[in-house]
Length: 420
Image (cartoon, rainbow, N blue to C red; front, side, top):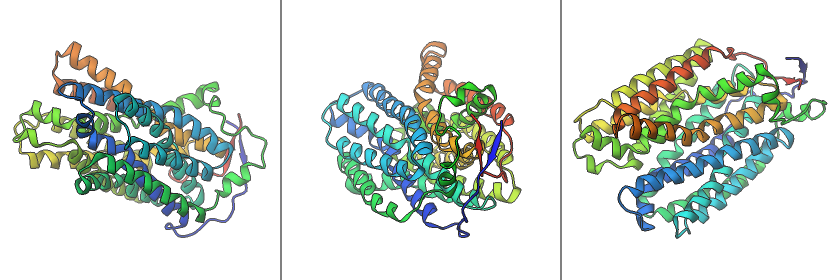
């Protein structure tokens, strides 16, 4: 890979600069909307006339539509981020998912619900990648890990906020309206931030920018991109299946008072743990001066917690929610995952990678659901616990192997452009 140097503008010395704060708040609203569906899934579908096992089936359909939207949106916003700038993506993405949120509060059919979850997914896809890219390029290399840690830890707390808002309003439609209003208010804050100096300088070069297909034209680039995606997949198996469908797992485990287990509460506990996990992994990677070592430890911890969770027979509902919290801590490597993706590639395709990688991970959920459903319904004849252990183990092994193939990026200089 040929590299051309880019002159970098002076960078802010404070980690808590406008770019970090606004990116963190944007990701907060992003996660609020992304996880709100899991929190209101059962009540919203019942309100639309869905009952029995159809609630689970329609829930899988709706979350798959949302993730398909994120898959498409990841490519769209990633390319635009490298061609038009990181700021333009931050504005455009939040406007789209704010409108979709409000529309979600007005749906009267499952098909209408699915359409607006698809649109919301497209909008949500741009927030994290553009924010992380902007922060990584705006801070000195020895501090950017702290910046991305703040963005991720503040952002994931949006899931807790979504649960609390639902507890206050007790109306799933009002919760969607609240998310839409929060997004629109955030647009006004974004006026205060400026474009990345690296991006501005890259505009003066002749390298292709935002060329998504270039990730597939070079074998080395393709496998590096693929590995960036694969290291994040265990997180979305945990959140998208084990936590989102926690009421079903609680019944299979014979949890005491299993009928009282709420998916929304499980998500809130999981994401509370994820806040602590993101902070811990971010700080540890800065102290150890390694992204890969800490991420490896968290991937192993995550697999252990999957087995503990799926073998917790007969425990109390309180202990079950505590396990959801610890599960969240175990996937606190999400901040390292997005930081590693941002640090692997040059400025001219950095936003493309940093936006598409997490959204390909999120967009892989329909495939993960299909694989899990195949094991559950065909191989293990309805045994959701053993199916979860098998799929969780497979994904963890793949992630650890992929992590071993990526270079350490803790102190790498990001001031370069890929020759495509």
